[in-house]
Amino acid sequence: MRPVYDLWGHDPENLYKYSAHLQVGLALAVKEEIPQVKYATRFHYAPGIEVTSGDKASKEKISFVDPDFFSMFSFPVLAGKKEEFLTENIMQ
Image 1: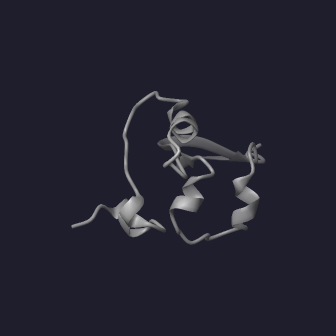
Image 2 (image 1 turned 120 degrees about the vertical axis):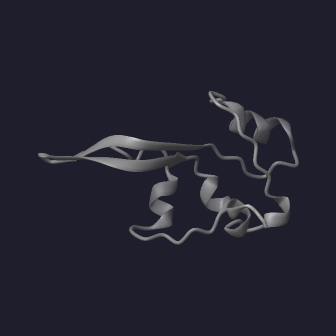
């Protein structure tokens, strides 16, 4: 059985997973130093982030990824436009 991340990839034959904790600059360094690497992304799952909107607050399950994630995987966008969240620093 193929890993789930292979099923959503644009090119599953060329999709590789590398897992490392606290390797903040690794994805960027791999892209810059290895010409065969077209895209690289980090993925961080945060199950208990407090999100506020006005005077309301709630704990949410949130995942953080780099913009290349959306070039590597074809998850459907449920709200908003893909182009809008590919820019840096959009969360305020």
